[in-house]
Length: 250
Image 1 (cartoon, rainbow, N blue to C red):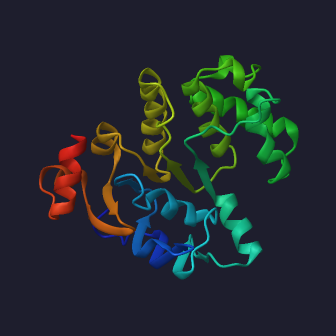
Image 2 (cartoon, helix red, strand yellow):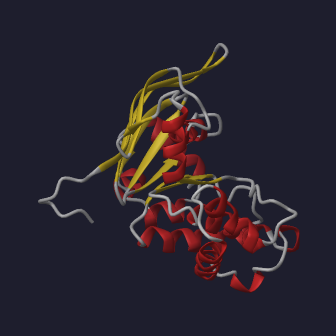
């Protein structure tokens, strides 16, 4: 919780962001701020632009109009700025994207060694700590193909954390998992939220959103329809579109 006397520090500022895929106007003037240490959950129907929107935060998707600033750095076409931002922003996808020919430990060590230029000993120590934190230290020498989907997603989270990011983005991290594996990944994310890292999570997991989010945002048709705290969002939504969406998922 923010102290009422302190002004929250904004780390993500998106102002009037527009994006087109050819003729398709996928983001239609979306504006949103995220404060340091805040957990924001983005919900919305399929095709609403939510995944595209958070992928603009680390330049995985370009945008054509508007302005995005990440921790004081404007996200422009300048590759140096993009590299700086990508070092500060971790991302976990629906698919795990692990290197199948590398062990779990090597997957987690890779970016700190190549991007941060850490000595291998330091990278290995940090990787082992992170694998313990996500509950799969015992799998360190195995290869991704030997793990369950839930375990692979936890490796992917550890891999993102190994770069010591200030912000973590999650793009429907449980949607590719069997139902019984969803909880183990959400538990890791719950624990991560308690550490005070800034998180933006695209998900349909209502229980997680109620329990962990500081704020929930609904997107539909490329616009931000409503944003509110979890209690207000689920119990007393202002917009008819939000009520309709909730009636379909609750």
